[in-house]
Length: 481
View 1 (cartoon, one colour):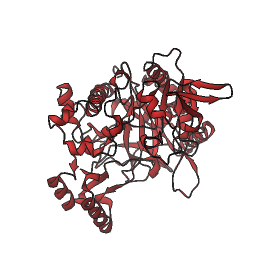
View 2 (cartoon, rainbow, N blue to C red):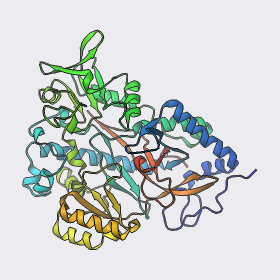
View 3 (cartoon, rainbow, N blue to C red):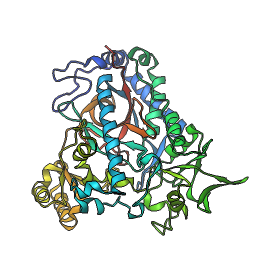
View 4 (cartoon, helix red, strand yellow):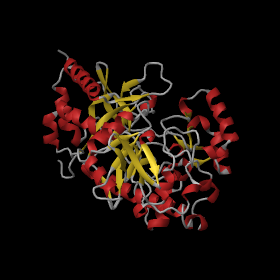
């Protein structure tokens, strides 16, 4: 029976995370490669099929809007994990901590003294014109002055093997439930390797999440709710999963009522006060009295109760100003301004179309660049120039000319690749990395992340909404040899 082998595995042209440039396996992948080579191809396919059955049994599905293939599907979990050295992870952790502290200082400054604008570190008009900037939040001071309590920073590894920040997610970052469930499935698939490789655990994420939420209120015991848009939301599985794991209530906007500026949950036993709401509803929809008047997802009066300090909203409304992809370009300067430090996790070179010189450069070089909407997410509103048609490039040029503030551009980076099961063979597929930071009285980053993988050969788009999948991320002990 044919065994797994890597003799035809291609490593040229990209940074491969299992093999180096001379096709030798990297030390931290040696034991896993040896384990794979003992398997037959049929056995590997059987194990892969088992992961898919496990995902279905756990209800690990998500919705894809405008998808005619059905309402729900699983986020494909590839059986081959992504392995990260402990020392690399420790460096990433320090960079993420630096970044999230600086970003929260920036958000707090923007809604209060606005020193960073007065000192012209970042253009005033760029910040105030951001879709994520909420004038209703001016003067607010969330508990402990933390605005983004839960963040998911997207990282990529470039040709040189170094990690770079691709973008920040400080509003309602998703995917952490897949990180946790992927681990549970892979532990059952390769149980002996976890002990041999000293893979760091991630199971306590939800305990840290609950501790962080409780730290934001004086109520004891705290009554915590997870606010979901409902069952048709693409991340509903995650909302239900996190509520269940934390012992919190899962609620929709219609399950809450505001009375005398306090928030209550409607129960069969009457009204029950809510102290902290981990919201998975976007800013525009949380309160129809203040934001989108057509919203049926939020609760009337919720924002006023929050402003009065009678309920905590996590993440704080208005945090999305730091998600803006144009603001992203200035983050190294913001780190220097607020912390007096050089950036530990560098950005990718970014051209801001709102700036004339940058815009001219972008318009002249669209076929070589990646164009993104400054308020876009999920892989939507994006053009990968080197893979686009002439017509698509011309259409994006018109969009940029009509609304330059709404676009940024970056050179196309060859994302690193990780071996991935592709039918009967193993081939390299491009990946990114989303670690999750919890920020309350202190910062917690569990040693793991959601690795998203582009399942289509040659594709650089890893988003699940665009057909991407996921991998379990194994972070090894720093002293692993």
